[in-house]
Length: 256
Image 1 (spheres, helix red, strand yellow):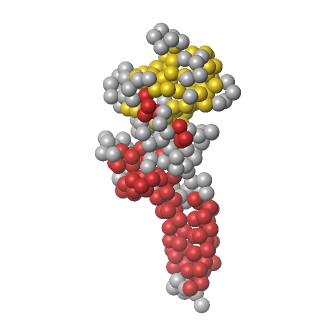
Image 2 (spheres, helix red, strand yellow):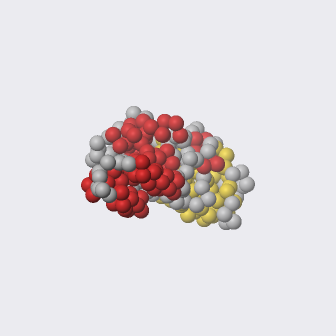
Image 3 (cartoon, helix red, strand yellow):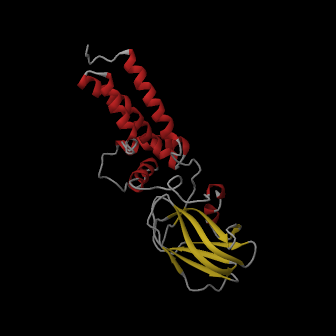
């Protein structure tokens, strides 16, 4: 007999599908070790300076983490800390993301100058020709702010440790709501971003923290669609089919 009533059998089937989806959805959801402290340029021309402890090391790459706002930076290198070569420009266009900047040469001092007011850098790492991290000493005010979380520097840049797709808008706006900053994104109502900010209060501004509420919303969609399909077609098999289709949809977790 066909019925739209949710039975014990339906509950069991819903729980099984939802549990399997939940387990899979949390695998590689994101990192919990992103930088939490930032150097912010209060004025155009603000700078930070570092000394390479190993002396004139053959540097090949700089890895850095951006914050709530981005902008270009001028990068200077020097052998003596007084005479700097012509600057290179580091262009950034992402928030809360790791970036690489190729830099080849032997020098002992590095200076980074902000070209825009209100830009953020979270952490900085420099690598030698063998791919090993070069130890830096902060020698200017605030330069320690981007050397204090070296354990967060990833071996590889990926979605696990950096924003991607709409996160450049929504994760950023959730952070801005949390810290009472001017809000960047108003194209959607703020409820979703406010919900995203809740885990960030406890776990910090990490990829896992700002993805977890969306993931939970996706998990809750599985029993919801099961119930809708069962009520509509009055057979459990259609509830199962709808729930499996929902679980297999790669956008199921992107509901916030």
